[in-house]
Length: 83
Image (cartoon, rainbow, N blue to C red):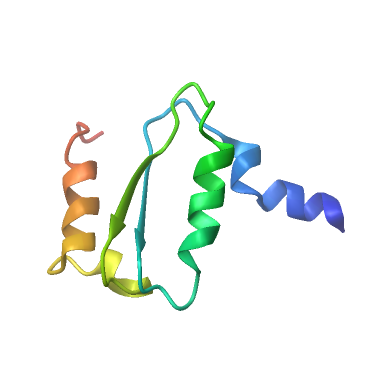
């Protein structure tokens, strides 16, 4: 079973593509320290992820296009041409 954890681990799938990790500081579902630890381990990647911590945002705010976290995700995605 431990190999399944390795397969699911984000660190096992580092990418050269730009990535943005958005996390609310008030996320009660996934503590922000988990994201900070992930970013620490990815700091030497050829293209380390960008980080955006949204003060006072909760877990679901990043999918709401009317709050700062959601707008940040939309802004990031709009930087790339559509297929």
